[in-house]
Image (cartoon, rainbow, N blue to C red; front, side, top):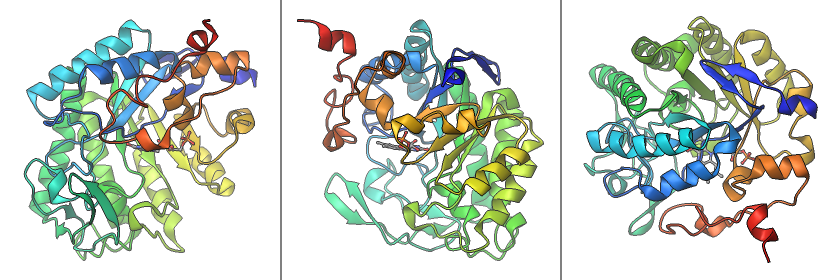
Length: 358
Ligand SMILES: Cc1cc2nc3c(=O)[nH]c(=O)nc-3n(C[C@H](O)[C@H](O)[C@H](O)COP(=O)(O)O)c2cc1C
C-alpha cells in the first residue's frame, strides 16, 4: 500500500502519488461545447488527484457523440479550457485533456451540424443514445473515405495543439470503449477492404497515424493513449483473435516514447502482464470493478505505475485525503452523472471536512 504514496515521473510531470483521475464524461459543457465555470470548480476540487484526465472532448463537430460534451477546436473552447486548466494548476494539479472522437456512437440531434455520424464502416452499433428528445436509436453511420480519414487525423492534430494552447499539460488519445479509434481496431465495426481494414496491421493503422500526428504536433512527452482490450461497449466485439491487433499496436506506439499508455483493464491478467512487457514507459491501469481494498494490487504487483480512479473521485473531491485517513467514501449519485443536472452531483459532493462541520 505504501507504493501508492510514492512520487513518479510521467512525461513532463512529477506526480505526487500513484493515483490519477480517470476520464469521465459529465455533459455539463455550454451549448457550443465550451466548458463553463462549473467545470473549472469541478476539476479544481479534485486537484489532489495529481493528474486529472478530463472527460472525452471532441476534436471536431463530427467527433461529438453525447449531448453537452465539450470540444477543443474553436477559440471559445480554448478560452473556456484555459480557465479550467488555470484553476487546476492553481490548485496544484496537472491536466490532460482526453481527445475523444465518438465515431458511430453519436446521433445527428447531438451534434452542431446535425449530420449522419461517421465511422470506419456503415455498421450501426445496435444501441440507443440520449438526445434532447429522449432516447433514440443510433443510426447507420456514413463510411469515412480515405480523404475523410486524413481530415480526421488532422482534426486530432489541431485539437492537440488547441489543448496545449489552452494550458493543458498534455492530451490523452481515446482509443478505448467503442469510440472511433476502437471502431477501426475492432473487426466487427471495421469491414473496410482498403489500407485501414482487414489485417491487424491495417486495423491499427488509423490509431498509429493519429498518435504520430499528435506527437509531431505537441511532443511524445505530452501524449498519452488509452485502450480497453476486450471491451464490448458500443457494440464492439473484438473476436477470438482480438488481442493480436493490440500486440501490434502497442509495439508500434511504444516506438514513439509516449508519456503513458492507459489500460482500462477488464480482468485478463495474462494480457495485462503481456502489455506490461511490451510497454517500456509509464503504464496507467484502471481495473474495472475492483474493490477499494484492491486498489493497489496492480501497483504492488509491478503491473501498473499509476492507478486512475473514476467513480470514487467523481463522488469524493477529497478522495486522496479520505484514502489516506480511512474516511468513508460518498456514494456516487447515478441519476446526475450526465446531462441536465448542473451543479447537482457535479460540484456539490461534500468533503470530509464539510461533513465533520457541526
Ligand atoms: C460517468 C462516467 C463517464 C465516463 N466517461 C468516460 C470518458 O469520457 N472517457 C473514457 O475513456 N472513459 C470514460 N469512463 C470510464 C472511466 O474512465 C473508468 O474507466 C470507469 O469508470 C471504471 O473505473 P472506476 O471503477 O474507477 O470508475 C466513464 C465512466 C463513468 C462512470
